[in-house]
Length: 299
Image 1 (cartoon, rainbow, N blue to C red):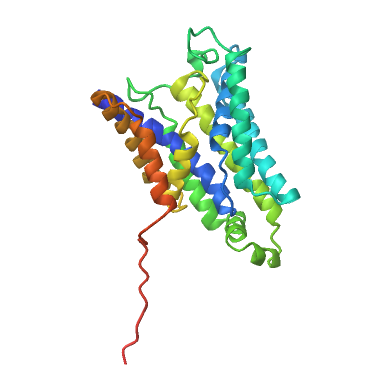
Image 2 (cartoon, rainbow, N blue to C red):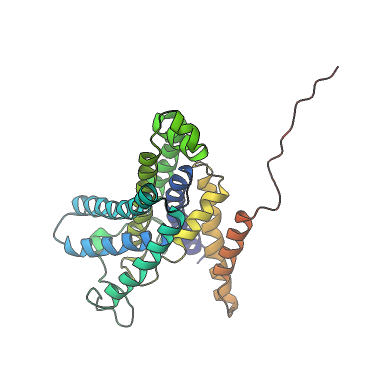
């Protein structure tokens, strides 16, 4: 049983890393993408639908094709928010959140209606074929090998922002938009690129959750993935390398709080309470942990 909870913690941490990277790209451009929950839901829904249509294709063809389509759908959602900012000056923080709130009930209705699978009382699509499911490396948990490519993705993101021209342009555009204009940086294109990548990663998170954890898109599976990914990114101080331990922290916190609530028969949702507490603390920092030491000359 302890091995099960360990594996589930690592599996959940993988999803938080992807969500954290999605938040990271948006914040580096100077704006928040608060549509993570809806974008995760879209990714999971599209993944479940296409894999149920690609049953005759081999996994090596069906899985990459489906995940590419999933990422494109999430990128389009991100581009809607950035496009409204560039055209009308609306804040992506609000438009991304409103779009997410609008898309969630639409998918709920689709799952409850024409796309509902024969799964009893569960509001869900058909389960994907076993050949499309990621193999667990720590049974009986759903922890699978996708954890290691996501670690590599965090490393690549770190080097992207540190060592590439585009990465530095995104950082400059987010920190000093006026200066970046004088430096001939196209802030509009930077915002479009950042939000497209952010939306694509959020949707990828939903697709991987379907293939590696739930095996079906059921109503509400997205809950917490967007917000906890954002929390992990903020805890990491927008450092892709520190996103790894912060995601592990969030994954273990949520998994073991749920375990404690189950064993003690608590009458309230302990994990949601802890999620809110963590998000509150990192959003309103009381203590400044960065101490600045000034050099003093001795005469």
